Amino acid sequence: MDGSHPGNGQPGGENENIQVMDWDTLESNLDSKIKLAQYQDQKKLKQWTAAFKQVTLADGTHYYHWNALVVVADNTLRRGVTSLFHDQLTAGHPGISKTLQLISPYYWWPNMKAFITEYIQGCATCQMNKVNTHPSHPPLSPITPVENAHPFETIAMDFITKLPPSGGYDTILMITDTDCTKASMFLPCKETIDSEGVMQLYLTHVLPHYGLPKKIISDRDPRFTSCFGKELCHLLDIHQNISTAYHPVTILGPTTNFLSFSVILFCILGHSFPTRSLMRHLDRH
Ligand SMILES: [Zn+2]
Image (cartoon, rainbow, N blue to C red):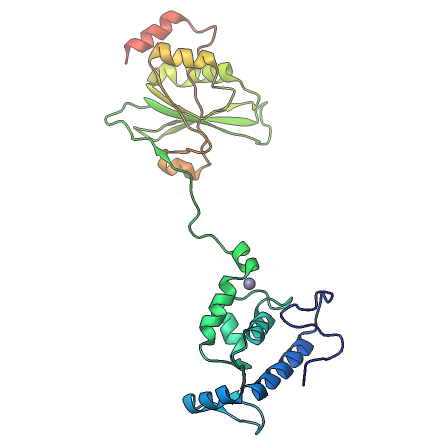
């Protein structure tokens, strides 16, 4: 009756030398302690018998609430019961309702839901594994589309990398018109492409049709944030938006479904680019 079953520790973890305890033995041990506690708190049990019609001396010796053994006001015992159904090895840390549901057929005490709720809210394992439904997203820096923008007036660039090699290419440069058409161009290239290579692609495939952009959205990719590029942007009066990993831009709408956009800059002038052509295109804006 006193719970001194050989080889058993207390459910509350009083015997730290025992790592794994048999559930049935634990329960039996706990029941013995609960029944002993009932003997020691007859006054309270008689009050509960009067207050709760389901509490009876069901077996003529011990108090039950229906078939559930009544646990007197001993928090160590109540913690033991809750632990047994919540955080023992096979319990798996069920939630409050589930834990209450599991305990109810076997043990009862007044307002046990509040006790179990408090117990689980204090369970370190549950807190560590809790799914954060309100993660702290980094603040966004939305980019407002320019009204009445021309096609490819504001562009964003990104690479689709790690593709199977094909025709000597393993990467696609995606250039997206973010304000007017939302259209994208997909230009094959190599992952090793540098800023000058990007610029050449732009000059070949975009600039002849749409001219120079007024705004380029870029990330901090070292390939494209050269001082040279910044100077060029300054020279051409191109407004360069630099997004960072902590301030992702919110642009491109549907195209973000295609891939996660870490947008890139362009704004680089190649050595072979004729200044006269450049100025001609500038005049168009
Ligand atoms: Zn837990």
